[in-house]
Image (cartoon, rainbow, N blue to C red; front, side, top):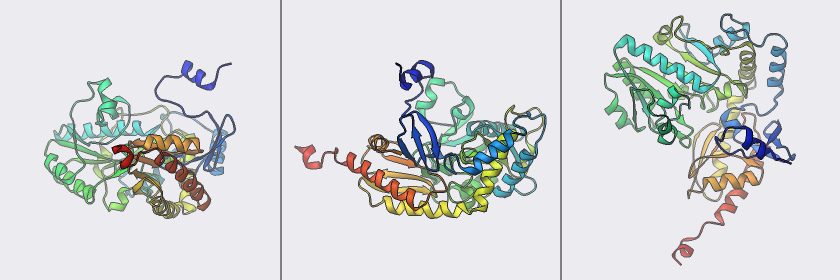
Amino acid sequence: MSTWQDDASRDLMSLGGRLALLTRGEGSHVWDADDRRYLDFLGGIAVNCLGHAHPVFVEAVSKQAATLAHISNYFASPAQLELAARLKRLAGTGDDGRVFLSNSGTEANEMAIKLARLHGGKTGKSTILVLNGAFHGRTMGALSITPKAAYRDPFEPVLPGVRSIDATLEALEAAFDDSIAALFVEPIQGEAGVVPMPDGFLARARELATERGALLVLDEVQTGSGRTGEWFAFQREGIVPDAVTLAKSIGAGFPLGALITFGAASDLFYPGTHNSTFGGNPLASAVANAVLGYIESEGLLENVTARGAQLRTAVAELPLVSGTRGEGLLIGITLTAPVAAEVRAAAHERGLIVNAPDADVIRIAPAYTIGDAEIEEFLTLFGEALSAVAATIPTPTETHA
């Protein structure tokens, strides 16, 4: 008799290991085919902001699927119009803002690249500036603005006209010349290990982009829709970008992304320059309206802020932990040794889902709805995993001997 691993190996592309065969979820927990329970503190990589099978999500899907699921972008739907207006309000675009709804974060970033090219065509600027450590997606355009060699090298040549720099104020000042059409920035680089931009970086980027006639494009695919305790991370910095991309938490598990433009950037696209068959379909839009509406009405942003602070304080006392970084419920836990992969595996063995984006960093992105019970369970399981791994690390004396 074949196992599910045999079936996966036979039928699915070999693009990464699958840790378990999950069959159902409820709240912050999921169960595998053997009915083993896991505490999910990764949330589908910062996606499941309401946890699993939340009644608001289930009702929105069921209600909209029973009326109108897909119509193409030859038509508009009430849910699509409501969501566009909602996103403009939450982002603070004013009347001149515009929204395009896509199916994923990488699609939103693809459109943002086209926005930069349109701006470059009008201004004679040709270069897109990106940051080392950034991750903007795996399609060819998004990959072109993702400098990590392991992701890009197999697919060279990628799009030309992209320059990468270190995420420092000094590098930004030196690189921002008159050739720059757009600068792409993640306020917190999630795949790099939850690395925030340096103090003052976004404010200076805004100033330089304005001075040099470039666009400031913020990738908030991970940080947007309330993940940091603000609707958008840029709002914490007191700046206004020219465009922002988002996905992940906006649909709480339903595939959906968006590009939001501000001011003059809203006038760059015109009929024929972009579209999507599935983007902004009534079903996805209805789910996002329900999810974002619930986050707002239930004051979940306050819970994100409070629970994030609670977690960062508590994990600092655990073995192997050297510190934390991030905002809200996007947290990178830094370790004293490059054993993040071992910690992730030990956590999984104990029924806890986290991930290791770097050799010495564990990333967590739990649901916005977590409370004391979930945090207590996390600290117990994570502490056990850390202790187990710590016991395998030789002491300096043992190493010397």
